Length: 347
Ligand code: MRU
Image (cartoon, rainbow, N blue to C red):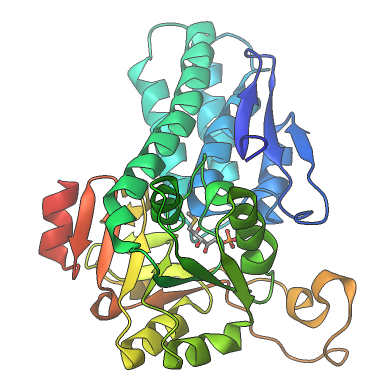
């Protein structure tokens, strides 16, 4: 990756730098975000996207929201809560967003009594730690899942759960990066991922940069490549995983899991512990974002459906745990996930 997906530049008076993912692959541009409002917008329109990367940006966004507050402690703490509540309205599904905001609020609270100026510095350090922790978790996920990518195998992925979607290295793509580093040869099939084409624009871009053999397929080609025996396993990322192992991820993931089941192809999910929401019993309780109709009818500026037509565009779907062969986490591989196995590994 030529630049970190999300990073803090400078001291407390610095800014967030993100790769603007709406422009890829045609243009590589690093954007400076100076306000919490700019962070909200960047998350909303998917300049920064992917569950872990959203969490990192939101944590840093809290710092942007509080730094101009007077150094009075109560005012700083009030601003932390207000900024966190505001950023929480940007997107509803990826739990990493709420996880990071809660972590920032908790740390602010733990440092009560140290004064507003000190709390600001502490929160800046915490936001950077969220980024660094995510980078470490992704590397560990890569190591925990690399054995699944065997010499000569074919692996299919959906959406983008790579370095662009995380602090670096990715979740679903991490085992592939690790296997590549270990000198293994394999083929990746990337679903293009309608309607916003994260697979075509982002996964193909970053796997290409890494020199990994990667073939773009239309979403509706997944069944055929499985039937042709070209796919030995599927690995996808996740936006939220319920206590029993149901997995919310990019719309179309559930369909891929059903296809994989039919063709006897193991379906894996890769995600850090920050993507689990143990407060939810089942995937039915996961809030699913619905996106605007224009992303379907006028994708990338070209009209592809009649004016005024009705559109239903959920951004995510839920794959039941029964279709999941395993969840690769930084704490190890949870095979055939159940409530008990997940609780055991996550503690
Ligand atoms: O709408 P997006 O692009 O944010 O959706 C991203 C995904 O669905 C990813 O698969 C998921 O967030 C995991 S990223 C490591």
